[in-house]
Image (cartoon, rainbow, N blue to C red):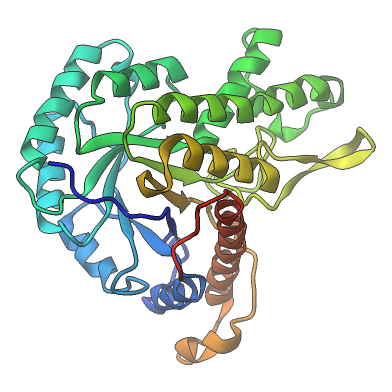
Length: 355
């Protein structure tokens, strides 16, 4: 039996302690998420880890999604058992569980179909069971990703997580490789001397990302299933991430260039604020406001922002550097959340959940 869905889109942010320090950093995150009215997407590998971080839930009714470890594989029986354990222990307390897709979904579709069916059957008896969202992360062709969810469209507990920037970066790589066979556009981020002559092709590849994302939303939305989104921006030339990836960026940034291109010394990201609004509108129009949840999965860039009203949380810290780095990251999430809310409220008949 279908359990009731929210009547509004859920909005969340990445809720983690990615900066070194004690749990006051999580208290700061709790405060800033409360101010923004954001739910929290938390990473946890065990129920015990999740119980610990749930103590910092922004509000008792704040939506929570749990991102399971990267090595979880739907086709693995032990992983399915662990997912069912999570679902049973946190039923009614979390909205969903996210795990990555796998390259083998392209070559072993029947194995993954059977795995999803078996998982769904074990989740069905759990009252107020969280949904399981399989995230686009392995770089599959969009058609392969869609075909998998078409094969499980009748399953109530297993659905899709569309990571818009993962889709976009992979599309930019494909588009650039069609023009320059064997070359990876992301390898140009060192801005070598040949980049100015390639910039038009880079720009064209980047501009192909948004239409690909919108088309994927349309295809997945046609299946009538709830869908979770990871929202973040990116660009193949980005060096902002301390983790070496080209994405997980704020929608409010641009890429600085060491040369002038089209009269500018910077390049827009794949989506930007306008692209974010188009993604949100497409999701709400194709899926429906009650079937959509959004997480701003933006990583810190380790800039600093004074603590202001939260200074007392860190009165025992001699060096406030890491606290200010955390505060800056949270401010970036808040700013992007305001853009997300504006995008939701711009869609006729849809309103964001009150914070």
